[in-house]
Structure formats: C-alpha cells, structure tokens
Length: 253
Ligand code: PEP
Image (cartoon, rainbow, N blue to C red; front, top):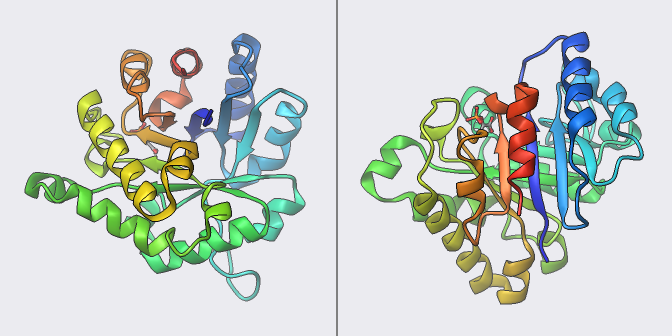
C-alpha cells in the first residue's frame, strides 16, 4: 500500500523557540501512526538539526528541508546542497514548490537536476507540480501538469520514480483560502496516476504517493483525503497551528 502522508511546510515562519513549541505541541498529541502513514515537518534550514533531534526515534515522523540547490557544491553563496542535508540526517526535501518556481525562477529542467541529486543522496524528493489560475481557466491544467512531470521526473527509471513523492498544488489554492474541490483534486490525481501508468505501468503508478496541497485544513482534510487517488497533503498555513495540523494528521487514510 502506498504511503499516506501529512507534510507540514512551515515556509519562512516561526522563530526557533516558536518552532520548538509548535513541534512539541504536535508531538504531545499526535496519534500513533500506522505503517503506511507518515508525518513530515518541512522546517526552515537553521532548525533542521534540532528538529531532527526532537523527532528522533518517533515512528514514521521525519524532518524535511524546503529546498536544496541543483548543483553538488561550489560558489553558491547562501545555498544548501543535498550532501549537507544528508550529513545532518535529513532524508526528505521539498522540490519545486510553486513559490520557488515563481520567486526564484526554478525551471522544470533545474528541478530535474534537484530530483536527481536528491535521489543520488538517498533523499526523498517531495516534487511539487500544479497550474496557475490562468491555465485552470483555460481548462489546460492536465497538459500543464503533464509537462511538469515529463520535464522533471520522467527521465527517471522505474526504481527511482518509485522513491519520489508527488504533491499536486494548484497555485490558485495555495495560501489563498480557496481549496480545489475534492472532485477537482481527485480528477487531477487520477490524471497524474494515469500518466505515470502510461509510461511506467499500473503497478508503479499505484505505488507512488500523490499529495494534495492548497489550503488544506482541519475542516476540509477528511473530505479531500477520502478521494481514492489523494494520499494526504502538503500543508502550509494550517501546519503552523498545532490543533489544525493534528486534525489533518488524523484525517489520513
Ligand atoms: C504549501 O505551502 O504548499 C501550501 C499548500 O500552503 P497552504 O496550505 O497555506 O495553501
């Protein structure tokens, strides 16, 4: 059975003490996770080491980075490499969040490099894809997402693709309070799975976790996650409030 995942994305929020408090508040009340369930906390770079210590030994709870650089090392002031992440025991990394694509001009080709580097460093990439509002309004979202997958993931062999977690995040639903309806989410997730199946076969398509992201919160997580092709969520705003994120975790299948 593919993994059902609740992934928090703190973005550029919380001081160290606020972040520790939030993490501890969640861990104090977190339900015990089944083998097929996983909880990730994508915290800012400066907190990765301490956050990792806090979750150490807790079943299926991991710390993730929010980004990594697309080169292995060198003169890239301010950047963080996959080897640095591995060296501090971080084994998950968000790749291609729409905010990085928009504000830091990350292209599909650059994201293919990041995915490759993550996999070579045994880091699970949480690969984000999703269309802007203008594309949704034209009805071209399926093709738009397919191109993102094609250009950043479909060079991988089956063994490697299986290690990737995909997060479908319609940009118009991120941080806007607008959520895709559960039908819209299911439709895109089924499309993503069908595209994977056409290239890699049904078995692999059924093994890849596809998360939904875009204003997931306590009040809508259960319905969205109940869709057959939705395997949990990547959660921004609601992951900054302990009770909200706990409810999202409890909504996992
Ligand atoms: C995100 O940051 O990936 C996200 C989906 O944010 P929000 O939940 O706030 O829409």
